[in-house]
Length: 230
Image: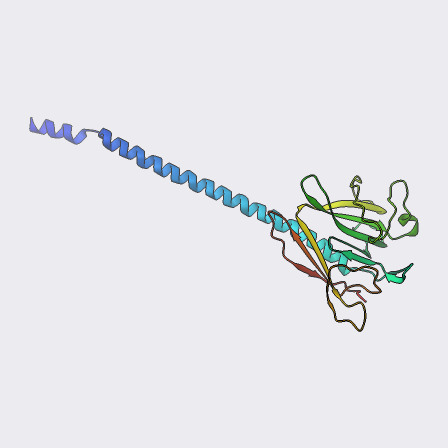
């Protein structure tokens, strides 16, 4: 009799309290597991977005750096005398550079970078004209070029693809601020200093400082040096 009772006691299952405790512990473990998975997913998404932002940043900075490094000291005559074709203000810059695309078409281009309005905030836009008199005078598909100091009009941005005569494109979307400063002295009697604009000068600045601010991207402050600065 005692042997049979001992066997029944040995084979009995979990009590209700033990089952509730086990379910509670299991629920907590599942909750912790899913919280960890969600945290890992958010961290992965943040890292992935940061990688995309950094890649975009490198492409834009590389493009600007290449164009400024290829700056060409070309002069033109104006009502104020002979001036170099380099103009800059706080949110736009214009200069002559070599071809910005590997399109097999050589020559110089007037490059203009400027901040323009957009549907979701400002955009960093690029315009470029082939540096030839017939192109700069404009035509059916090419807007007439006027110096940055004379024409601050925004691009139309209705040209698809890359054109060897004239093209325009958006380099960055959702730009909060674009700040450009210029280092140099315009006269041998002046001390070099940072200036908010560079217009109607006889030489190009020694350094160009560009700062871009976006809500979700921390852009570093970078310096560019025109190699052919005079």
